[in-house]
Amino acid sequence: MIHQINNTDTSTENTVQKPFQSSNKPDLGYHFLASFYGCDPQTLDNPELLLKIIHGAARYAEMTPFGDLEKKFFPQGASAILGLEESHISIHTWPEYGVATLDVYTCGTKESCEKAYDMLKMRFRPEKIKNEYFIER
Image 1 (cartoon, helix red, strand yellow):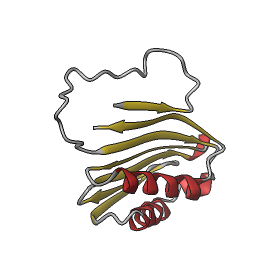
Image 2 (tube, one colour; image 1 turned 120 degrees about the horizontal axis):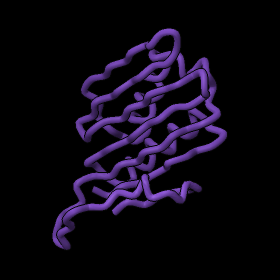
Image 3 (cartoon, helix red, strand yellow; image 1 turned 180 degrees about the vertical axis):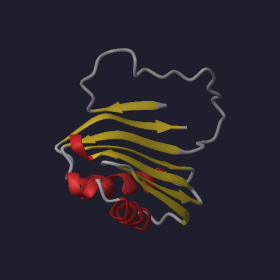
Image 4 (cartoon, rainbow, N blue to C red; image 1 turned 45 degrees about the vertical axis):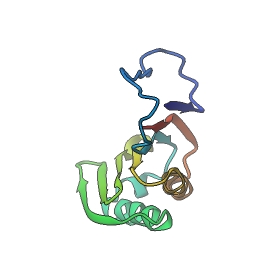
């Protein structure tokens, strides 16, 4: 099930439908997706710091990392991805606009997904959040 959170965009382009849903299917995972606006450009342009932040969110949520990647783009921007035994956390940034897009996906518990996402919100302190979705897989 997809839950759109605090999104004022009423267009149908963000609508996602599942082609099949079984009533006896177990929960396969939980996924937060969001775009953060009004974030600190220096933080967004520092891939090493981005990795520290997503590692911290994973620790806070008691998730288990197995590897990470980071990439600095020129003249600005960065991406950081943390592989988890439970799935992943990723972030892609546009410092020139103060924007970060991120996702937290886990086949672990709903609570761990929420904890990691809440920690990312606390660390990035966005002025505005758009396209915020919580998906039950």
